[in-house]
Length: 479
Ligand SMILES: Nc1nc2c(ncn2[C@@H]2O[C@H](COP(=O)(O)OP(=O)(O)O)[C@@H](O)[C@H]2O)c(=O)[nH]1
Ligand SMILES: [Mg+2]
Image 1 (cartoon, rainbow, N blue to C red):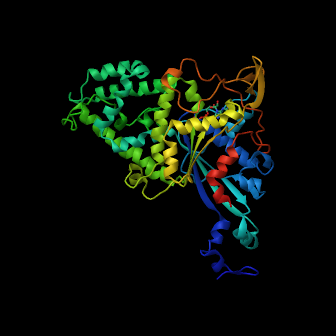
Image 2: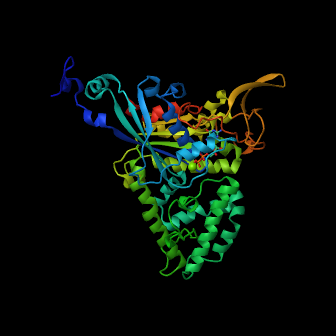
Image 3: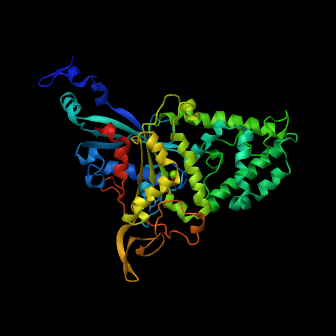
């Protein structure tokens, strides 16, 4: 039994004696950052790392991260890249881009990457006191941050669908409204190639190329995001292997088996390989290790993009939520076994685009966009949270007189503009707007230039709620 003068028998005190050597040597926590492309993952990780590295010099940047606010942080430093399996997240390049004149935003990245920060700190309470005597007062937490595309999570629903079912769920979407215009060529092509025609490699590849092209157009030119399969728009390191060359085909409700040697049978085979080799592998090899996750959602961007893009973002967010919803028999449990996500935070990003008083509207809107309230209720509320966030606050709050009334505005410099200006974006609704409410655009917001940033990790970067978010996600491991 460990005896420490003045403290008596520790076993009696603690019930279960923690492994002090382990605590002193360091433990690891994985934090995964995800969200659809342009949601703000790269900017989030860059600012998070920079602010952690700067926190010792400028604790006022991260006061709500308790280990900083309490003055218990001893050091934070970048971990070497030596043994990492994943490509390294380009933190240094990103900071350089944001700190130069004129300041720019980091380049888009399309794949999974990783970066580590070692955080040395004084633990709180009894354990802290013990360590104080055993190891000079410090513990180390190895924070491993992973950036992965949220598009990949859109594929979880595929796991419980057959190829025929998937085709039947996709094609009606592509025959409506804006999507029907984008899908014209593809729809015509598959109209000429029924599933029961004799299988042809060339036809399958052509259908795939047309389908992939329409997904990319839908994303890049129309702001749509509910796009399956996710790897067709975010392939990551997947090479263009033949098993990827599939696309949905018209399959009547009455058909559940395809004739041997038919185009349908070929597509079905490839769909099944994709599920096994790509979707299931991602959950089993990666996702299951990420105990803490933050899902970034550009709710404002979705509002700006108009009615169909907003509805699409809602569908995508619903699909993403499935990856965080356990049930005894859910597909997720089958894939990740007993692994559990301990905490997940849904953050509405770019909250610096709107004045302070509207930021809570942003979380309310996000809550009402997806089935978040039901999920929170089921999970007891303790392991899911929602908040507005700006990783890099590029504006400051102000007011302006409009028609004799004072309104809240944000002040910032639009990219490429010579000087700062005031912006009154409009009201953020707290519920998804009704179809007839989309007449005029909801918001009018430019892309702002990042603020002045010191590339050395000394001053940090202004933000909104970055410290609160991090404390929610990993604060328990820094006590
Ligand atoms: N004003 C502001 N803009 C942001 C913020 N985070 C991201 N952005 C903008 O959103 C763009 C996409 O962000 P990025 O992190 O590259 O998204 P990713 O595709 O999810 O990695 C950036 O180039 C910025 O213009 C933020 O906190 N404030
Ligand atoms: Mg990125």
